[in-house]
Amino acid sequence: MIVTEYSGCRLIRALSSGYRTSLRPLEMTSRSRYSSNRKKMIDERLKSKIKEGRGNGVLEAYQPWLKVREVPSRGSSHILPGVKVLREHQLLSDAEYHYNITLEFDPSVIDIREQFPLLPREETAAIASSLGYPLTRYPYSSELLVFTTDFLVTKLDNHGKEYLEAKSIKYLRDLKKAQADGKAEPIMQRLQIEREYWSRRGVDWKLEFAENLSDVYLKNLIALRTYANLPVRLDKPQLVEKIINYLMLAQTDKIPVKTLLQKMSKYLFLPYVDVKILYFHLLWRQRLTAKLNQVRIELSAPLEIGFTDNQSLSYGSASSCLK
Image (cartoon, rainbow, N blue to C red; front, side, top):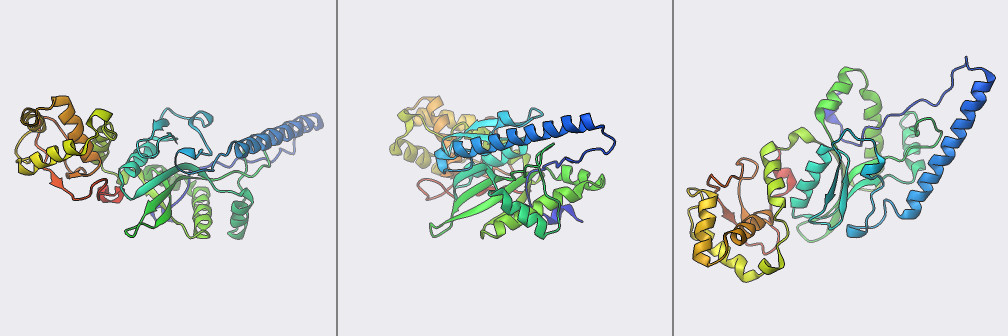
C-alpha cells in the first residue's frame, strides 16, 4: 500500500475493549462496572456537545467539534483568532495552523470550519462495515467514535457559486513511518472511510501533506497576516490609491523595502508606520502581488511588486504555493 495514493482524516487510535480471560470474577465485575461508567460518561459528553451546537453553524457562529483544551497535545496546538472568519480557530497541530493561514489568504475561500464532525456516527460505522473494516470506538468503551475532518472549506467559483472542499492535513513523514513500522493499515482504513463519507455528499476530499508547503511562503504569510485588517484611521480608499499609484512608478525590484517606504512616507506626507501598514496590508489583500513562495520579505532587500485590478481580494490561492 502506497501512502501518497491516499487522502484523508486525522490519525485516530482504536484501542481494544476486550477483556483477558484470566481475570478473576471480582476483577471482571470491576472492569465491567468501569466499562459501563465509561460508556455512560462518553454518551453524556457526546449529547452535551450536540446540545451545545458543536459542528453546527457557519462563519462566526460555527462551533468546532473538538477544541484545543479537550485534546491531549504535545505543545503544537493553536487557538488562532481569525482574520477572515472572525472567531477563534481551534487548530490541533502546527500543520493545521499553517494550512489555516493559507486558507485565510486564499481569496476564493469564504468560510473555514475546522474539526468538522462526520455525523451521524452510524453512517461512518456502516461505511466501515461495507469496506470490511473493524469499527472504531472510544478507548475502553463500546461507544462508536465520532470521526472529524480537519477542514471543511466553503469556496466561491469563478461564477460566484459556493461549493465545499474537505481537507485533512498530515505530515507525510508520519505516514511513511507508520508504513515502515507496519502500522499504516488502520490509518488507511480511516482515510478511506472519510473519503467515502464525503463522496456520498458530492464533496471533493483530499489529504494535504504539510511538507508540500514552502517554508518561505508560510513565513511570508505569517508576517503579512499581522496586517490583514486596517486600523480605522487608514481604511480609506484614497490612501490605498495613493500607495498604489506611487508604487506603479517606483523601481521596486531595485530599492530595499524600508527605503521605498521611507520615500513614500515623505512623498505622500504620511507617517512611516502608516505607509508600512498600508503596504503590507495590500500585499495580504493581494492588491499588490509578489513572488511570496520564492522570495522572503525583508525590509533590507528589494521586493518586486506587481498589481491587480481587483478592488478587494485577488488571485493567489493556497495551491499556488506548493513546492
